[in-house]
Length: 139
Image 1 (cartoon, rainbow, N blue to C red):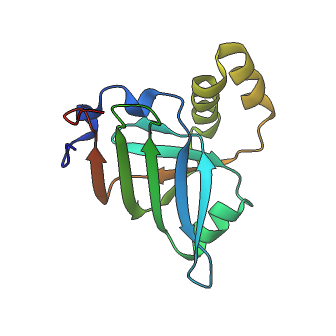
Image 2 (image 1 turned 180 degrees about the vertical axis):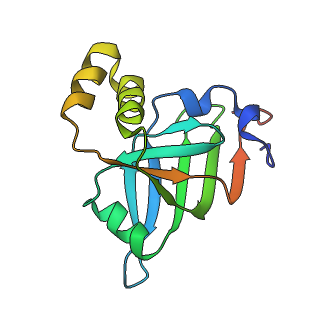
Image 3 (image 1 turned 30 degrees about the vertical axis):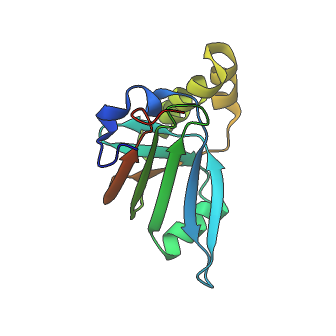
């Protein structure tokens, strides 16, 4: 397994419409794992949600977050980011549109974006980044 990679070493992984898993913390310290759509842009990950969503509520109380994107087929590339999340309120509509098109295609993505309740972007800029693949391992 190759370790210590940069996101650029993973090829198109972060551009694929793979679900990511976002980790946030409940008040009792347990972790909530949420499957999310994402985009990698300008050196960080964007996750769209609504202001009242449980993920946003958790992050307002405790900004620690983790995100994993991994592919389910060889060479099993993946990336994990642990950081403190921030909220972005500017350009939310454009971000929701890009992300929805990534996952649903042009027509359905635009339709979804127009009806989405998302009004905030969770921004995850790598505090700690771990990237890997199994391209050097016979599978």
